[in-house]
Amino acid sequence: MTDYIEEIKTILLQARQKAYTTVNTAMVEAYWMIGKRIVDQEQHGENRAAYGENILKELSKSLTGTFGKGFSYSNLYNFRQFYLTYSEHDKFYTLCRKLTWSHNRLIMRVENIEARNYYLTEAAEQNWSVRTLERNIETFYYHRILSSGKISNELKLNLANEQQQPEDFIKDPYIFEFLNIQQPIDVKESAIETALIENLQQFLLELGKGFSFIGRQYRISTETDHFYIDLVFYNYLLKCFVLIDLKAGKLSHQHIGQMDMYRRLFDDLKKPEGDNPTIGIILCTEKSETVVKYSVINDNPRLFATKYMPYLPTEAELIAEIEREKLKLNFSNQDNKINNN
Image 1 (cartoon, rainbow, N blue to C red):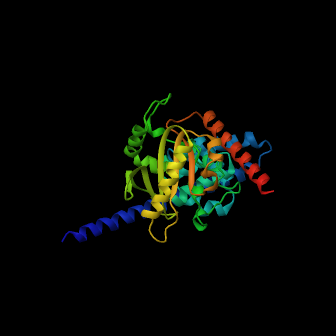
Image 2: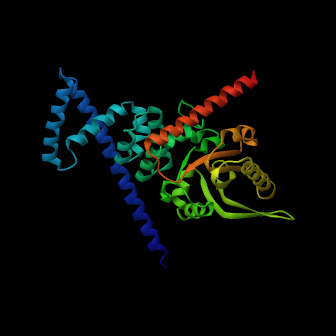
Image 3: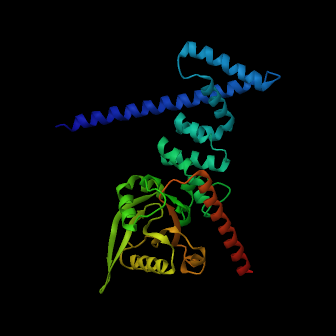
C-alpha cells in the first residue's frame, strides 16, 4: 500500500539530483567562459600583467555589486586559470563538465600534466567525492602507481576501454594514514589488520577500483590442514580473487613462499570456472628488492610484494620513496634487457 509513496520519493530524489547536476554543469561552463573572456580582454593591454590585474579588480567590484559574493579577485583569478588549464575544448566538454567546481579547482592545481589528466579522468569516471580526490592528490596516488611501472608515461586516458592488468591496480607504497598510527611503528600485524577492517571504506578507497571485501582470516582447508589468509577481496574488474597478507617487518622468502601456496590453493579450491587466476599481495613495512629479484615474484605476474606506510609521510619522504621505486624499476628493466640479449 505504501509502495507508491516510496516511488514518489524516488522520483523527487532523482529530479533533485538531475536539477543539481544541471545547475552544476551550467556553473562550471559559466566559470570557464568567464575565464576565456578575461583572457581575451587581457590581450588588449600592452603590459598584460598589470592590465590583467586591473581587469580582475574592476570586474570583481562590478560583479560583487550585481550578484553578491562569489566573485572575489581570487575566484576570478581561478576562473582565468581554469580556462588556461583547459583551453582545449575536448577535455573541458568531456571531463570537466562532469565534475563540480570544487573538483576542478583541486585538479587544475596539479602541475604535472599527466597526473592532472589522470585525476581528471578518474574523478569523472569513478565519481570520486571531493574528499576522495583531495586525499588521492595529497598522497600522490598517480605517482605511486607510476613509480611501480603500472602506467605508461603516456597516460592511458581511457582505462575502461582497455584490458585490465593486475599491475594497473598495484601501488607502491600504499598509504594507510587513516589508521592514525604514529612513528615509530610498534604495532602487531593483528592490530593493523583489525584497524584496516574497522576503516574498511578508507581501505577500499586506497586499494582502488573494483575491490569488494570477502573476509578476514579466511580459512581454506585441505584434507589434512587448515590455512588462514589475512584478508580476501574480489575485484570485479580483474574478475579474480585478491589475497592480502600483512607483514609488520621486512619481506622474507618465507612470506613469498607462503603467499604463493595460498594463491595456488585458492585457485584449486575456490576459483570459479571462467575467473582469472588469483592475485596474491604481500604488504610489508620493509621490502627487500634482493628477495623480490631472486624469488618466484620475479617470474609470477599474479604475485606482488609492496610496501605500506601506516602514517602520512611528508611530501619529501613520499617523493623520495617514489624515486627509489622508479630507480629500482629502471635497474630491473636494464637487467631484463641484458638477460634477453
